[in-house]
Length: 94
Image (cartoon, rainbow, N blue to C red; front, side, top):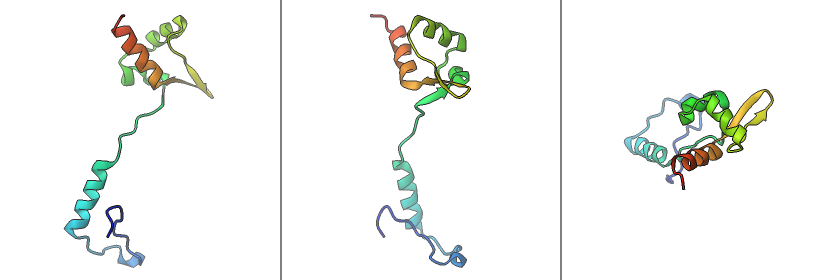
C-alpha cells in the first residue's frame, strides 16, 4: 500500500472490514501533514474575534485609508492580509 492510499472496501457490504494498526498509523500520520488553512476574507462583524479590534476601529482605519472594506452582496468583508499588515504597522511605529 502506498503512503497516500488508504483501505477502501470494494464491496459496500464489506464496510466492516478490519483495519489493522498500520492503517490507523498511516491515517494519523497523513492527518498531521495536512496544512492549516486560514481564510482570505472574514466578515466585518467577526473582526473582534479574528483580530481583537472593534468594528468602530475598522471603520476609523478605513476612513484614514489604512484598510479597505469589500462588499459581497450585503456582506462587508475584510481582507485578512490587509488587516494584519495594518495592525503590525500601527503597533510598530517607524
